[in-house]
Length: 315
Image (cartoon, rainbow, N blue to C red; front, side, top):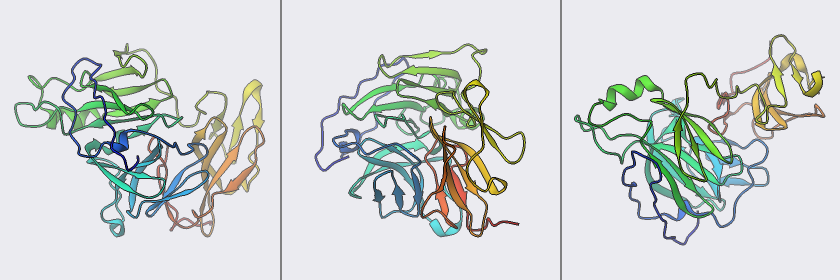
């Protein structure tokens, strides 16, 4: 995250661990001046817009999260072809708030890149540094970095098969591995079974099959509010049976999910269309500047993460 390289203790705390993937510059693993994670961050082109600043990476961004001192992202190496690499294995990169870009040297499964809401923890599935199976494919490993301390606190392959028995190239596409939820205390991983990992202990636990699904995107992270999509126009359902009408042209508004406990987001259909946010309990809505008619990338983990608004217009 900075110019200075810090020494990082690479500790494997879970069963099935493998040696960390080597990088020359590990400064990206340590946070000195955290950026705000509130509101709805979004990227257009090579710039990520945060609550109080814009981070210009100088590189087209296909997927990202906000954590530590800036933005962790996957490069869109051909932004003009209309296809964003939102899935598959790509190198993780980091841009500090001043726009300085660092190559981490870590190849991650793009769709698994996540950050805790407070921006302290960064998580992804490392696809390149594990023990190889009989066919030469490395075993995947869940990796979590504590950016406050600069330590890799979890590196676990417990949930990603057995290199002595499995053909990973055939297994992994069937698994659709994903970090289905993350908060400031731990995460939930779907791979060979469903697992929960604790950030304090570094330990993972396989969950029983009847533990239920992870929270749906229509429900706020704290479970207090829900976007009701059973009819048009939409309403927001809150505590005690409250039904809140968003203060917008509701026939043109479609809400997709929640940026945080009190901020719903979606798109206002128009000419051009734009990203909108609506607050609870006030119901106040506002257009997100610099999104109208653009291709907008939202942080990994949010529903409808890639929004092509260039061709969306009202009837």
